[in-house]
Image 1 (spheres, rainbow, N blue to C red):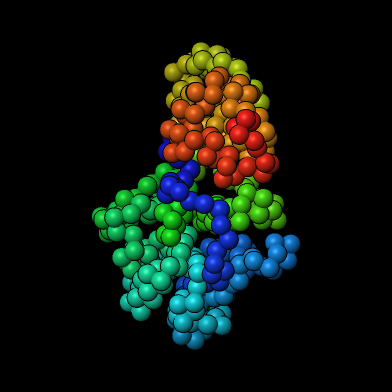
Image 2 (cartoon, rainbow, N blue to C red):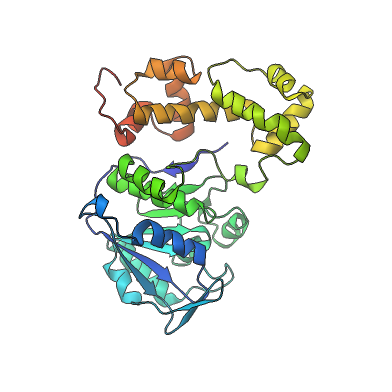
Length: 340
């Protein structure tokens, strides 16, 4: 299964110099995606200190606008706010077949040239694409739109199976809820793991999710009669990651033939048992890297990865970084060089 995220190298946790986050509003506004931007960046969070984000809404259409769900609204500002922003959020778009106004495209290009970061949620990627900002770059969007994005903008390298792509100053997310993942990722980048975890706790969502879009295309367990067998099996595997598992062992635990088990497991999870188990082990490894002072050998043993060399190999292969570099960026506890 592809990475949860594609991150450009050499990203560092640092407070943004321009703390103004501007979300675009437009006639036909995608209410959920806009709500994500408001909830993450627009609420007062005094516990985060005086360096926290400031928030504004830029209406790109004049006068009263409509939002999905029968809401009508008027924004406090217009395109002039884009020029003041340090981060600009495009919360979806009114339709992938709807043209993007040239005035908006020009404003986004100017803002990006001046150093602003641009973040799209779901179909908002079509706005960044129309502005010409994603040519020659990697990006993602909801799995329903990936083929259309590829066809209309062939210069973009579309990654169809990730939750979000961090390209440094240009960030794109998959479906609506993946926008939450990307916004939390940006907080983690700007203010560190503790801040992202605090906001995630307020939202009652996990600080980060593992896997890619494939796991959300089909329902988790496609047949009702399989829930009683596959559901408990997945829970058992998560609870005992250090156990050696074979297809024969797992199929017996599920009460299926090996061939039937492999077919239904992939239908339920989007991947094979071996790859699913590897991702679960790596997920636990990430948690231990963030929250413990265990050395690499101990983490490998506690997650079923065996050795530190095996941990480093799979970590680099799946996340394009090393466990030590991940710990340096995301650890919630100080770790000495000897422990790393």
